[in-house]
Amino acid sequence: MELTTVWFLLVAVLFTGYFVLEGFDFGVGMLLPVLGRDDRERRVLINTIGPVWDGNEVWLITAGGAMFAAFPEWYATLFSGFYLPLLLILLALIARGVAFEYRHKRPEASWKRRWDTAIVVGSLLPAILWGVAFANILRGVPLTADHEYAGGLLDLLHPYALLGGVTTLGLFLTHGAVFLALKTTGDIRERAGALAVKVGAGTVVVAVAFLAWTLTIRSSAAAVVLAVGAALALLGGLAAARVRREGWAFTGTAVAIALAVATLFAALFPNVLPSTLDAAGTLTATNAASTPYTLKIMTWVAVVFTPIVLAYQGWTYWVFRRRIGVQNIPQH
Image (cartoon, rainbow, N blue to C red; front, side):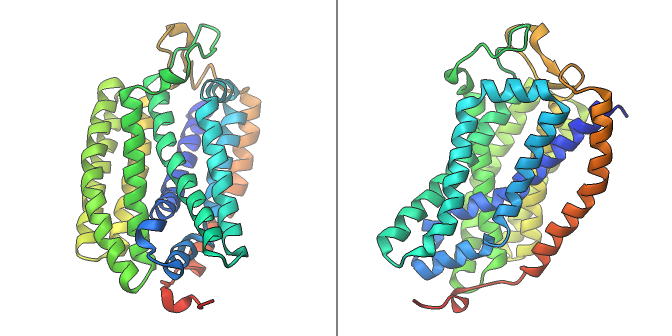
């Protein structure tokens, strides 16, 4: 296997891990005012992701770094053409991170409400915009023969991209609700489980429509298999949620998101950013890649450090695996 293909797969794996892990973070953030009926319940919700949310964001940093080093032409064109959406995602993630740290600094209800709003908005915007961005990556954007983006913001907001945004929004909401049902006790657990089933029913319809549309734009045998697997995993997760098997439900939604992202990358390959303007402008895994020597050095670094990072993050989830409820939150 060529190193360009290896690094395309690694970038795909990194983004898949990011969406699976940060997906339930976003879901919890968006559900904060829905499932948290008072301050103690909202603190329970925040505490379910408190030990892991910043570690989950490392997947995005690593994915961006891998893209920059392995496919600099892809990185440069993508980040210049998608500048405004990616900037909004960055600002939302910054506001969300600050809100997690500042919310408890003062006791006033108005202070906490403002930071709660920042958490909700900081989770909502990326949940939608990531779907819009990846839908555009797969469909293609207007690129010149010099790989320069020749469109504007409105070129990114076509129906397929908007459906992609609604799909990631629904998947993350469902994933977050299932995660809360898995990590909490009492009334919050009951409400989260019921909400996961309700939101998930609509998400199935939207996700199937998006994946079917995707396969009409670009497709491969692997992409079809992965898309079918994603739909089945989501249905299985919702079936498990209905009978309160939260562990299996979370596995189902996690696998569904992973396979959905894998579907996009499988359909995209060997391109990394197709051009809708000039076929000569299409970026592929070959013409967007770094030199073979660079890829070789990066491969050895990845072989050494990737297992260490995975082991550390797995240990973190194991340490903070227990359920929590309002009984674990002191009144003050």
